[in-house]
Amino acid sequence: MKSGKLERLKCSVKNYDWGRPGRDSQVARLFALNSGSGFEPEKPYAEFWMGTHDSGPSFLVSAVENGALNCSETVTLKSWLSKNPNVLGEKVLERWGCDLPFLFKVLSVAKALSIQAHPDKELARTLHKLQPDVYKDGNHKPEMALAITEFEALCGFISLEELKAVLRAVPEIVELVGAEDTDLILKINDQDGEETVRPVFQAIFTQLMSASKDRVTEAIDRLKNRLLAESQVRQLTEKEKLVLLLEKQYRADIGVISAFFLNHVKLNPGEALYLGANEPHAYISGECVECMATSDNVVRAGLTPKYRDVQTLCSMLTYKRGSPEILQGVHLNPYVTRYLPPFDEFEVDCCILPKGKTLVFPAVPGPSIFLVTAGKGTMNAESPKDLVVTEGDVVFAAANTEISVTSASELHLHRTGVNSRFFEA
Ligand SMILES: [Zn+2]
Image (cartoon, rainbow, N blue to C red):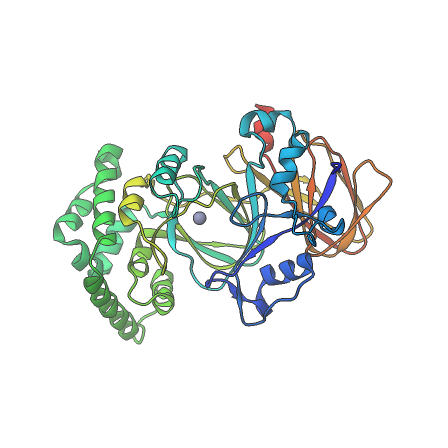
């Protein structure tokens, strides 16, 4: 098959049980429009995947139109790239081989995802070797979530001072971790240096996460009853309200209590959060565009019915403390905002083009994926034939392709590509 500069993609959906019900899910809408199929209003729709990961591949529409689907010869983006490596660009091929370095997603979150972290490259290779059925690839997975609605997450550990306040205010945690670990935390200060603080932080968190199921169930019951009683006489803190919400979603799960150890972050639409390797996090609610390195490696330890790997999680974490950085994006022009996380694999552009405008995306040395999240327009890449695009359309653009976009109505586009800092270096 001949390689085009722009290729339409049909993409995969994930119906994890934390997803929003079809009638209320951006993922369901985009998937239905993208695939031309419907959606089930009550079924959860969690993630829409655009990329080459084997767990949720994308397919070329030109191959589908040629009838390839009918003879069960689907052409995945991955297999097409392997036959047309030139579309990735030289520098990308050299660094990452014949595959997309990034995976692009939309998430619709109704209830909290598991408390998790993603391994760095070295650990990912080891885990994949030891447990290939759980850790499906050997890659790291830095990620970034760009809010499209208000979006809440738990992300990274709170500061030492905040943890001391938690230990004074939440007796149920002290009961679980014991007086000894509690005293150690209360006695140290950041001035004592990382080599003192980090092991103490790791010890108390590991102690908490390793508590037996019975003790956790009891502690959460007591915590819940105490907070409900106190809510009659005082305003609960945001974190306490969150803990009660998590308790409703995941009864008797240690993740409910460990939320006290993590920063509670609220993003407005247009704000982004990024997560490096070995940082604990859990998305709580809202919808976002997400980008990551091509990997599905997740080490889970709470808020999940899935397999937990508490020892791996507790030993891999960096135990960095304090509020995470929130990206506001940089304006490239009046219509495009760019989000640049500190990872080579990806960046995300958010473009809102008013009706009747034309905008040029300059050629970049790597591949891009465009997703239309609202409106209608055309995309053109140095060819006489325009590609008409509407909500739900996903388009792969080859490296070194200048693309002009014209809007027929207000057009909302997200583009992801390799981080432009990688090409500047
Ligand atoms: Zn994650």
